[in-house]
Length: 243
Image (cartoon, rainbow, N blue to C red):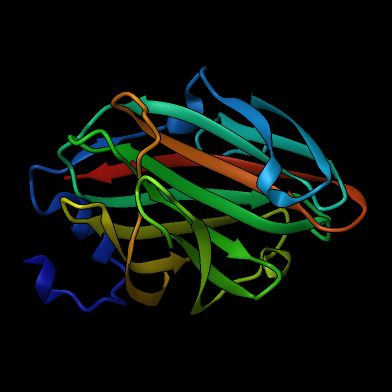
């Protein structure tokens, strides 16, 4: 069956998307990488955050999930990231992961799942995507400036999401589909949550002249809600498809 023959809300669409065309590449079990790092995201405000990450056997789907333990003050956010390759040519991507939010989830404002890619011209494309507990929507990022004088901003979609409304102590399947053109304009196509598709269908500029070397990396960020708190989230079966 061709990709176009599947309706966008068909449960098998992402599986078909990732296996057709046959040239698609996939990096699996990204959560198992030993190179994860973390830092406080100063863009979250005047607060602070600290994180710990490790592999644990429980809870997990594969026998080894990555645990993210984040503590914060004054709405601070902690960003975790890992480099998983280098590819300047691919322009279509599917982010596919399973997330488990430990109870209670009241201290989580946002959960962010990004990918960054350096193109052949040396500019970095930021594929930013988050579940926004303030607006209750899925959000994406755009460069509201230019690659040289960039202004990274969040844009709300009409797709609904709030991490504090996710069932806690349970695994949730998240899949995000996007692509780019040769200038770094990103089209965010759709997001699936536990097999339910919500369309996005938005194209925005997202190229940044950051001076990075060739890389593919993914960010996983937890933003705190309130004066202080602790949040624990687990990540398993993280695969990123590209072609």
